[in-house]
Length: 194
Image (cartoon, rainbow, N blue to C red; front, top):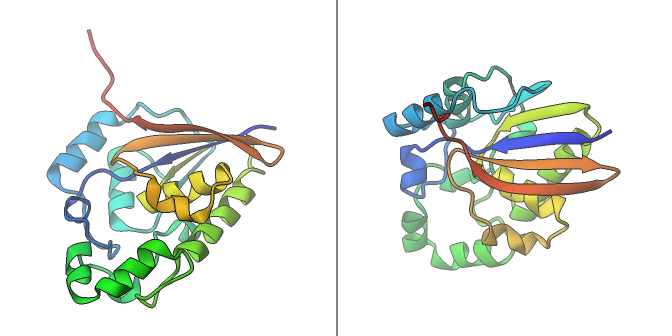
């Protein structure tokens, strides 16, 4: 049995534009909503549709015409006291903490989840998803995509920071017998007419 998981990153919003740690309540901006609506209908059908619990992921799924359930295991990296702040704001006040966080995957100076713990959480979900039959579509935070790729390719957790995930892209994983294949970041685009 081959499992297929398509991870869709959320459309653009103000938090993504400002490199702001998501607080889960920031809506899509007008251009993000328009781009997601234009891409509706471009995704393959799926047995399951899963959604990170953040507002931007729920709104992206809705604009894409997807109905699914929120899955707490697919929530973004818990940033605790840094939530809602920009990386520049935090760096100005806590430069050593930011440096440690970016260089030590086991460090969580914000009081939330370490990158290592987060990657382990996503890896557990992806391992369980490999037992699902058919295709799963999941609208998830960009860091969930990063963590899934790190796990699927057996990369060191430090590689998490070396992966960029563009808004409104699909990263496709297909797996069988404990092994995943990867197709990176296909942009979701409106179908061509004419």
